Length: 383
Image (cartoon, rainbow, N blue to C red; front, top):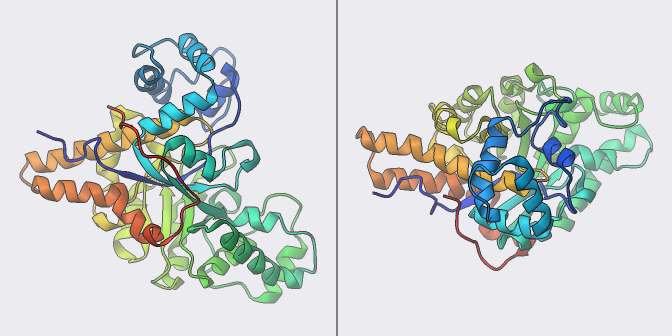
């Protein structure tokens, strides 16, 4: 009997990054296997659920036996070369559309067009609000709002972006203002801003409200992340006042969410324009925990409000494993419902399609948007 969440389900990865160009040594590879970066001396990020998954599931794609040792895996990776490794693993993922955040270390990573070509799929761009703001030259603080709006409109038009993203969770926390800040307040915040990343609630709120005024879908990093994050300030419940004020026609997408995935699910259930995923956590918890995480994330969430993302960055392994883990977790949940008589197999398969691709296509209007690049088809999914 076919699984309700089988590997045949198409996926739209609605939030990811590019693949790192060039070759990696062991230290570079291991640093990208962890949100904490390189491991301390004497430890290895291969000794994590994600590291085990690489050896178990990615090794065969590179013509190695399952559970090949780290040294053998990295030697084979170097032998094939980064482009061939990326092509194999991306096509193995069975993802045929990617929404790519280009705002972090973009010069080191493949462009959306290059990613799509490697994957044999299509790609669309996501513009990072803070990156646009930080690219603006110094000027009159009173003109900042107008200059940012013009720069954002230009960036979206130039790239054909389908959404924007905020990393306010990293910079100042998610307790954003429930209305655009008054011009004088914003000008004062800009005047006192230090060089470098935007770390002001007033400025971050202004960036997001500008995107909202343009009607763009807005993605928020929520929960699990790297050491620049203060975790409790990334609780999505802090967005409540903001969500009350956002026009209902503007989609708000909560990315990753762990360990606040149930809180995020509540927000998706009570706000018609809020959507959720558990992207980043899937890889780091590993395939063995995929079912438990998926079940918790789906508690009370309308099926039309959940999406798939990998948040893959740098390593093509993360795309392949994100897709595998997502499919495995969703299948475990839906198959248990079918076995218990809680839904029909047809219902389960329809839900899998909604979550895997249909919701993202609807929210971002992907069928109505010219993709950055169209490749030559999608390879076999990972078993």
